[in-house]
Image (tube, rainbow, N blue to C red; front, top):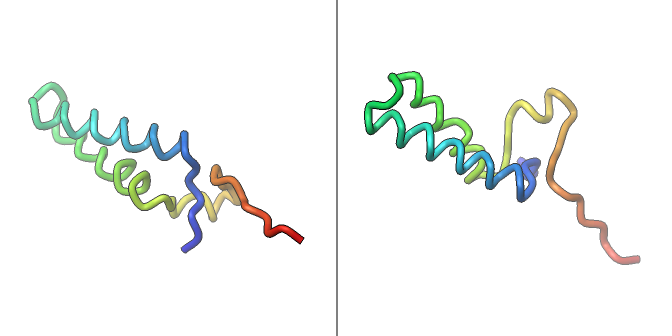
Length: 66
């Protein structure tokens, strides 16, 4: 698995995931808020399984110096 989730994307995924989980734990939103585990996990891992299917990547590619 090559990383395909970049810095800003990772930060947003982690933030949204934590907010959804916190709202679920406080009873503000229903059980569906546990879907926040998905963006949290993909943000922490740095890899999204949907991106390769769509041919996407938000991770900057590093080129070796010649």
